[in-house]
Amino acid sequence: MLKRLTSRKQSWTQHQWIRLIAGSIVLVSLSLSLSHPSWLWLTAFVGLNLLQSAFTNWCPLIVLLTKMGVREG
Image (cartoon, rainbow, N blue to C red; front, side, top):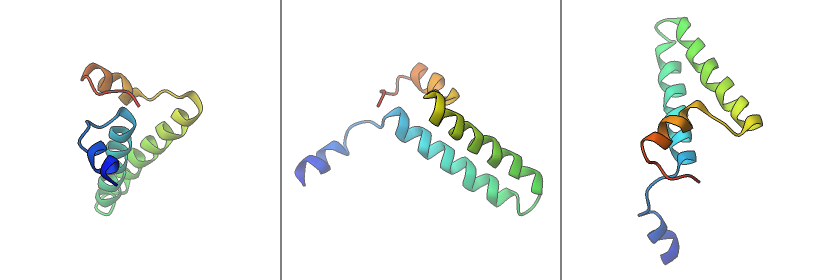
């Protein structure tokens, strides 16, 4: 239990940031699509990026996160 609590104090990994950012973009674009359906293209773009990263093990956001100094993992 103590180990789990202390591990939370470490900085987030690239994979955690990717999930947070992708999930946030999907939720925001779905909400915006209620006012204009074209926002669904952003949802599809994020979904396709996640799908291709599952096969290639590369995501465009990793380049940015690496430059920002986010630890790998």
